[in-house]
Image 1: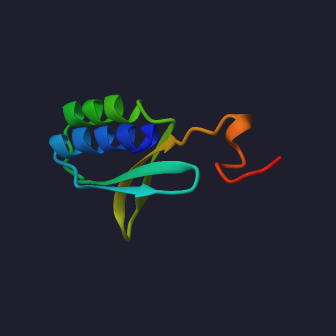
Image 2: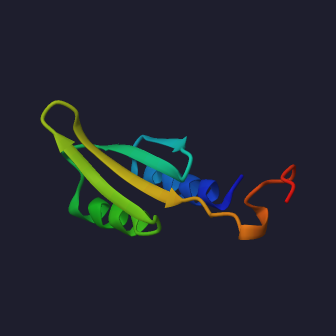
Amino acid sequence: MPASGVTAAAIAARLSAIGLPTRVEEHARFTTVEAEVPETLSAESWQEVLDVVAEADRFGLLATSLNGRTLWAAVRKTVPATGDVGGPGYQR
């Protein structure tokens, strides 16, 4: 598992421990974690949530009257070194 996946899995596990249901998705440049945030989340839990998502490269909160509140965090995947860009089958 790439480092971004390990970090995202750790973020998801910590958010789950707080009581937030999470989902992790792999994308081309990021691994993302999303969690539904209930209206009744306490101030102490919010502080814990912010401490957790601070480990991500980017994070935010989407709030709508239709879908509630969704917290997201994105962990950037590493870019290969210039010598590895072509991959193992690449010939110069």
